[in-house]
Image (cartoon, rainbow, N blue to C red; front, side, top):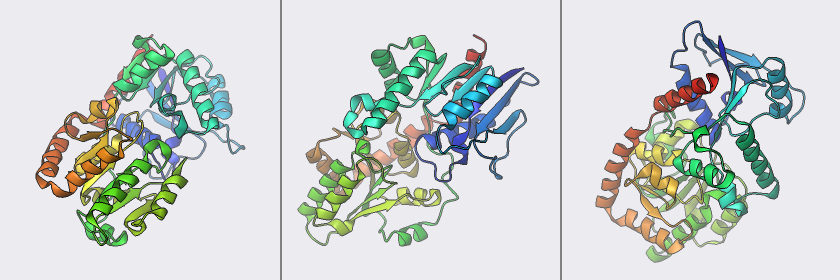
Length: 376
């Protein structure tokens, strides 16, 4: 019997974002694929009881590991469990591995090493923690999953990880962001006019580069004058550096047209995207970029940073702009506003491009990597 131990803490998060959404989508897809009869089982580790709505398939069990401290569950409590009852393979899809893992072989997902390219987007403490975590993974993991060729290249070039230990598994748009609210309800809730707002979805933080987007919007509004109905909508919780974005918007002459929605419930996202003029994603660095695929699924044109990973994901189905070039971002947004033909062209290309990605494909590739690790 081969036992796969998986960190399932993302499944208990009440408001998942980023990596937690990836873990939830991945594990949900993995559960739809059958285990080898009589020879495989999965243990999901978490610090709380299994959510009542989560139904585990045959061969999957939930193991609650109680812990009395507010921090340290992964490196103390989970390490203790793995030392006492090691599975054959331990998999953490969330970027960090326990200090100790006993005899278990380790597989983990590295989503990005953006902190090496854009250190100013992180606090000193975060930089140190991430560097330590990646070096530990590079040294101890039997196999490393990356979500893009771009991240794989970084691990090879920066951390000298042998290519044969790396597996690329592209991600996919959310299989379900619902149950969706109606367009009328969502537009009314946020006081928006369909087709008259530029949308950004993601954490408002330095890494996501909202400053450039806000500056471009301010310039665009200056050109069109007071009273133009176009708005900029930023949907996401606040992170490192958010205060600078908030202050920039407040100091502008169109502060009432730059809307910070905070964390948006899942049921509002589909219609928020579907009714936008376009989706703008000026990020300074990404491991993958699920939001641009979700925008393509919704049928809206995408304007995104000209990064290797964005071209890897979007191909010709997006407009690519240098991340920090305010003038070019202004032109790109202006084009979206006035050129209906271009918007329609990008919408068609986006809907076609997104067909290349699915969580089932990601789950199949992940299972293949797990099984290969178990049999090495």
